[in-house]
Image (cartoon, rainbow, N blue to C red; front, side, top):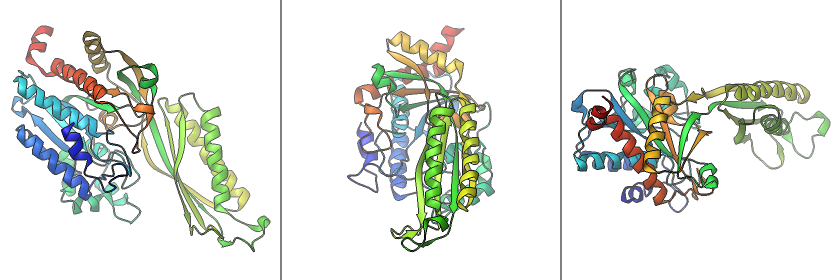
Length: 410
């Protein structure tokens, strides 16, 4: 908890939640603090070309490692616990194993991924996607923030060797398993009074940028029947998205418009352009496809009706991911042994761990979020629940990485 209090002080919005964007001054402060704690433990620390931190304990064992961790960046005015809980849990677990002088059969690696939240560029999990080889260098030059600065430029300005990112891409067989502890960011565990969630699947998602171009004019002198109003069109489309997700897609489908921009954004002027982002998610690919298809149809229909020009751009996507049965089984077995009251559930939020699917066995643990609040200053997870998650993850790691456990299996 001392680590928590130190790192959450690195925020650009003191008194109004945590704002710690990747490649910012606050990110650099958090990295400096984490690096100091890692050095105290004698970890082998590496920062890759996109800014992901990998810190290995007992790298000398020269075997595929057990990787644990999450991310330490935040959304604007975010909470204390999202991402950071998983990073600090990993740090604490390595501390405990070192204090115990545990006999390991394979290394333990702490990871903290860069730019998970997408706060800079509107695209989530950039760090883990680069780590998993999902981006080419030219694509990173094309992804830009609202000021026109690219991922490539941001990484380079931060002092990272982005031109050599290919040498840091994770290879199959390099790590034995990746397990991420994370707050639930929902209220299922709290409502069911469960201390632990064992994640079965992570929702796939598509994010679209919709641009509606109309005809800007005076709000008082332009008759309604001759207007090409992009805001009116956007309202129809956004309303339709919600109805489609709720009534025409699957029970597990969700769709959100969380960002909208209007230009010139003046009260007495009909807008020229309206841009908004559509976030569609489901643990079943069919649900995402239904809403995506209906969105395209509705945009065309509204544009034709109101004499508007429109474009739909896919700016981000990830597939639905089923987590490893081996790791799920290990977590469940350990939870039973330790008497944890757990629940199997799916994740509607996308996490870095999902990007590593296909490269290693992956698993996720959830701990409760009070009131289901997340990405806001009110985000809260109790020390008791954090400890429960850490205890369970510690013992799962022991089973996967300690010599004694491997001998028992034989």
